[in-house]
Image (cartoon, rainbow, N blue to C red; front, side, top):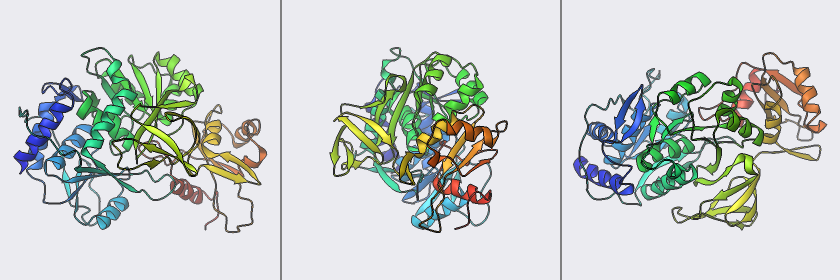
Length: 464
C-alpha cells in the first residue's frame, strides 16, 4: 500500500511542474544545508512506514522540512492532514475530541504535559535517505488531503476541507500572484516566511509553492528583524520575503539592511500605502499584497503603492449575491462568500471597504477597527497596538473603546492627543493601557477573545 501510494505521489509531483521537480532540486534550506526533492520523498516514505492506521493526522511541525515530510507521509498513507494555527494543549485536546481517529505529527522539543494528546509521533527528518523513484500514476484530484482551520479572529476556528487537485491550483495561483514565473529563467526562488505553515497563507506561499512551483523555502520561522535578516542571507537569490504587516512594520522600524529581495509578499491584514512605500524604498524592492481567506485561498493581489483596487486572477470571478460578494472558480466546490465588505469594480476587481466583524458603532457613528488600529500603530513611539470594544452588561450603555499599546517611551496622554487629531471623539479610547507585548498568533493576528482576556487581566474592562 505504501509503495503504491508513493508511486501515485511521485508522478503527481513530477507532472505538476517538470522543471520544478527535478530530483536534485533544492526544496528546503536548513542551517545552510540544501535538502532536495529526492531527500524529501525518501524521508516521507520512511516516516509513512511507521505511521498508525488512522484517518486523520494533526501536523504541528514548526520546521518546514519536517512539516513537508509529515504532510507527504500522510498523503502516502491516504490520511487527511489537519492544520490548525493554535497548537496549545487545549486546542489539540479539542481537536482530539472532535476527530477521535486522530494522532499528531510534531517536532516540538517540549512535550505537552498531562495526558497523551493525539498520540504524538516525533518527526526529526534529516534528508539522509533519498529515493530516486519517478514516473508513476497520479493522485486523484478529488482526494481530501487537508482540513485547514480558520484563525478564529472573531470566534471559534472553523474547518475547511482541501482536495488534492484544488491545492495544486492554489499553488499555481500563488506562483502567479507572487510573480514567481517572472523571475530569472531557470532560477530557483528562495522564500523566507515569517508565517507558520499551518496558516492557509503560510501553507500556500511556503509549502504548496515548494511542492508544485519549484521554490526553495527556509526551514524555520524567523520573527525578529535580526532573525529575518540572517535567514535571507543564508539563501541564494532571487529571494522573496513572505510576511505580514506586523512583521514588516518591525523590519521597517529596525532599519536593518536585508539581502537583495525580488519582492516582499504581505497578507493576513490590510497594509497601508505609507508602510508599503517605506519598505519598497528601504529594501529596494516591490511590495505585493495578497488578499485571501481560508475558505478560498488566495483570491486577489495588488501592489499597495499603486492604489486601493485588488485584482483577481483570470480563473477567478466575483459577483454580488444578496448582500455580499462571492468568489467563483473551477477549483472551488461551490461559490464562496467573501467574509469582508467589498465594493465590486468589475467581475475581477474590487476595493476592500472593511473586514468582516470589523465595524464598531458608537453613539450613532461608525468606524473600522482595522482603520483605527492603523492610525494607532503609525503614531511615533507606538511599536504595536490595537483597539478593543468590550461587551457591556447594560445594553443601553455606550460602549467605549479601549486601546492596548506597546509603547514603552510614549505616554497615554501623548497617544490620546495624537489620536484626537485624527479620529472622531466618539472613538477616543476610554483607557490606554501599556503592555510589553500583544497576544498575537504565530501569523501576527489578534483574536477578539485573546484581546478580551488580556484586557480583563489588566483590569481595563469589567468582568462579564
